[in-house]
Length: 250
Image (cartoon, rainbow, N blue to C red):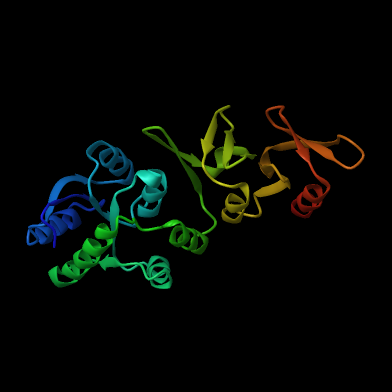
């Protein structure tokens, strides 16, 4: 398929699955396995460190799943082959977007077909676009229970109960937590709004989503607007539309 070996990393939280994939890959001389990761955190670090050509990535992993890993890698990601046991939402998303994947246990014949497709993809120099499939998978699994943020080489997992409010910052959002920390994430407020549990979070302003359990009181601010006083003393503007939304929840 190619004169040069593809340097590959295997990511799976089950050792038997990693061993099985490594054993299967030994039948393909064009692939050289240069590392393994047992979870999403380790995967992000290892991929950034070793810069592989190819990653065989399990979807269902604790804390960080395969789609979290893809999102955190951003444009720096190598070529990816998803490997999964039966996952109804993931398989539906793959089929909708005509995305190739491997179903466990991986057979040499199926892997050969995937590597042939990958060789053609690599020749074009164009990497897969995962944003649409990740959006579909996330919507199918809403509401989320945590927000994942990459900060340089660090990865933060923020439980929703620790989030006080989220603020729009152009193409980013700032997430403010109850322990007086803030995290910047490349995302939009509108997208995050669709993923949060509607009974706990409310968009009270075009620039703010607030955890309603963190609202201490609501006071007038001007003729057409009000302000939310949070339990930590911070004040956040509430628009007329946002106030109506909030009143439906309180």
